[in-house]
Each structure stands twice: as C-alpha cells, then as structure tokens.
Length: 286
Image (cartoon, rainbow, N blue to C red; front, top):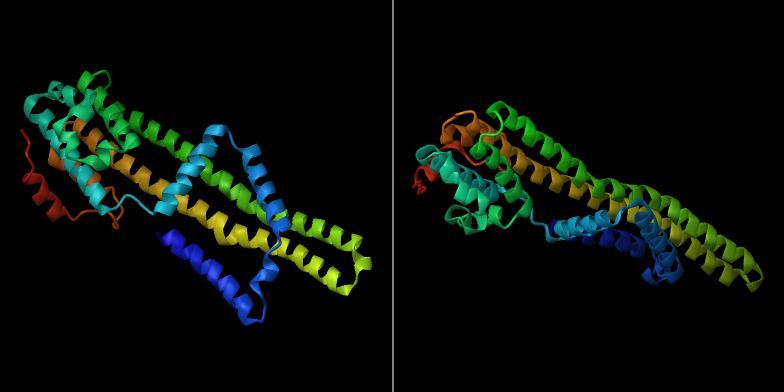
C-alpha cells in the first residue's frame, strides 16, 4: 500500500508543479516517446535477464505492490512453532519429530502456524534444517555452517531482480536521451513546416528526456530498493530459524534456543522477552 501512496505522490507532485507553472498535462502525452522509452527499457531487461529471473522480478514487484512484509506477528508465530517442535523433540526424543518434519502439511503443530506452513521457502528451510538433526548425519557444530551456506545462496538468488531493476533504472536516463535525439531528428526533418510544428516536435523530444529521468529516479530505482528491503526481511526470518535450530541441535533447552533466535531479530519485529515467554509456556507441548 505504501508503494502505491508513494507513486501517487511522485506523479501528483510532478504534474501539480507543472500545472502550477502554467503547463498543460496533455503537452506531455507523446505516445512515440512512451513507445521508445518503454520498449527499449523492456528490451534491456529481457536481454539482461534469464527467463526464470524475469518471472521472479514480476513476483517481487507484485509483493511490493501488495505491501505485505514479515512483521512482528509472523515472527511471533515462527518462534512459537519452533518452541513447540523443540519441546516434542526434547520430551519424546528426536525420532518423534520425524512425522512432523517429513509431512509438515499433515502435522497438527505446523497447521497451527499458517504463516510458516503456507510460505514455501520458510517451510522448506526449517524442514531441511531439522532433518539432519533427526538423522544425526552431521555434527551439531556443522549444522549452522550448512544452513548459513543455504542462506547465502538464497541471498544471491534474491538479489538478481534488484540488480536487474537497478540496471534498467540506471539505463533509463540514457534511453530518454535516445528518445530525445530521435525527436530532434524528426524536428530537423520538419523544420520547413514552421515555428509551431518545430516547437511541438522539440517539446516531444524533451519529453523523452524527462520520462527517462523521471521513470528511473521516481519509480524503477525506488522499487528495486523496496525489493531489497523485502529480501532482507525474508533473510532475517531464515536466520532466525537457523539460530534456533542450530542452538537446539547443540543441546540448548527449547526456551533458550528460541530466546537466541528472538535476540537475533531487528527491534522493529522483535517480540518482547516477557510476552514471548508467557506465550510459550501456555502452548501445548505434548
């Protein structure tokens, strides 16, 4: 929602200031300039991006427009889920976790926390982190390194849309100049048509430069930055899981493992220690 409000402010400020200076918005409507700038920018994106990254860009932009980020409530749910899982392993043995980890969608514990169950990447990361704990295939000290390697790989993968949008944003002012040069070429070809026609064509050419700069700094680069913040929020969630699972694998008490994970969170989404402890102690752990 905030991204829509911000976009409206950018648009309204630009057109409002232009109209206050005596300009007419219709003067800026030159379809040829939109075709050149939009088409070249799209072509640059297609040339620079593998197919799967193009799909991911659309997915990330959709997430930005929806404005749904991982907030305090989601982290609260995650910590409660981790505590329940750890308590089952502590009381009934690690083998008791197998039914929950192998088929999480059938697990009554996971079903109580849809924000994790319905988020594929978080669920997969948590399940993949718990499997070695159950199997005992690796030492507890090695688990954190294993999970951290996966986080680094996901971080690089999620940054691809950011880098490509920044490439387009950085290219847009230059694309605007290309559109302006094309407009000047048309102007030179029509110079015999009189001052009025020449003035209109020059205005169209300058509109191309305006659209390139405005699109880059008003929309494309800010959207890329918002995606970067959303990625950081998702990575924070994975790191929270890693801290908790690694602590539990090393033999820490469930409450202590969850507390370590809580302290790894940013203050904006970090539940209070007392409220979390009260909530955890009221959970079913059998």
